Length: 149
Image (cartoon, rainbow, N blue to C red; front, side):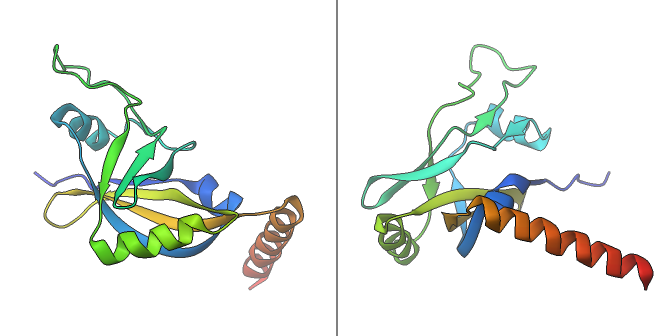
């Protein structure tokens, strides 16, 4: 039986933010959360990361739906979850997070080759409306050029 690959992408993040630097982070999950993620029952459009202390990074507004067969051990869908990074990566993100206008956003949830759920997060700055329009124009031009080739 072939294992189904998990690859859940936050498309809106790349449209709304200029991505500066990306990191791969682990996440502390309960068993029913892992099962819900494997069923792709995740909403991460409003998810963002913040520092509780200088060395504790947490993610907020990541909605992982309740597991259908979960009993009284089921999880809260919107609970805050801790992200797992090494000290150097935490230091880089802490320095980036204190700069004005930068935020830490969630880009992708995936499963590595060992079957562990990982997150791709990025330090990013928000785009202005005219930046979004320029991105749409270049995307349309590229599509037209590809169509004629």
